Length: 446
Figure (cartoon, rainbow, N blue to C red):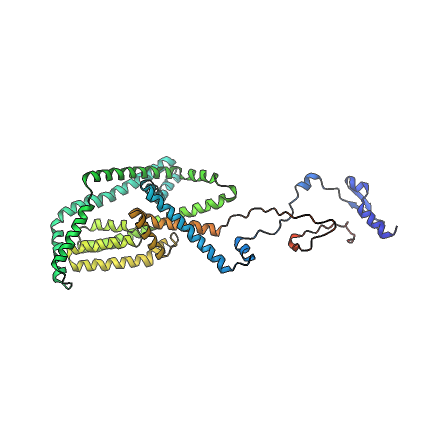
């Protein structure tokens, strides 16, 4: 046996003392060195796991691996997002069309909850119990709504009774201007248009029985909205937590983040609309007061409410203000009101909305206009009111899901066994692990 053979034999079979619990062994130079004791089984089990394999590829990377161009991957992603938003909006409008009262009540309750949730939150932080804070916020909301209804309804009705003769005189002035003014319309055509308008207004006015039924219908919806707002303020967080428990653990954080993003968008939209509506109403209301328009208060409140329907609502409320001013005050004051309305709307669209609502509603004006139009055609005024918040929430949720991808599932790769003595040579270097038997301290690798 040569010297090298003896060294290899010593490496392959350590002394009994070293196997039993440490001790010393003799190296090739005749000296002794300590041998550490073997690692216990418990320590071996608690050792850190082996490094994981390569990270799983994302969907775009997999598509590129199969030769799909980058532009096609982006087009498919954008198309999928558009289809998802369209599906959500269509589902909302379908429910609104099939179950109008229930769906509209739930949607309005969610919007009002987002509006007054800060009030209940401040009361809760001040030490007020959850039920009392929710009740106080609901009472504040009812007081504000009752005040607006009184100012619009009773005050407008009382003012209209006093304006019967001025309104009739204003309509006659418009008729004379259409016949004798620059348009030179035929008197019979003007009379036909007037009769057609009166007939349509008469047909649109509900009968006493239909009016009572409509009033009960609206009262039932109002009661449902109030109860929904109360319970959403009181138990909304618990409801959301319960829903999250029904979501798999792997995607729970992602769904929670999407829900919080949707709620932030909804709250930002409602608060932004309130601020923009107040600025519009104050600007147009000041002009009406200065000009002495009799219905200035009702027109101001109509402008405030019209701002909740983007683009279309402001246009309609401004047109009503101009027409009422034309009938009651004449052409000059009507032109002044028209200029004021146009200036206020330009400031709103180009300055206020991007500044106040830019973070909450990241939608192009064309998308907003098409959404409001589609909502109005499908579900009337409720659809026009709910179109923009539905679009904004759907877009924000999809954006959150896109920027926060789901965690990749752990993949178990099954590698077929190689024949004895054959090492696979085509496996990637990152996927191969070479097992090297450590050499004893102080000895070169054999």
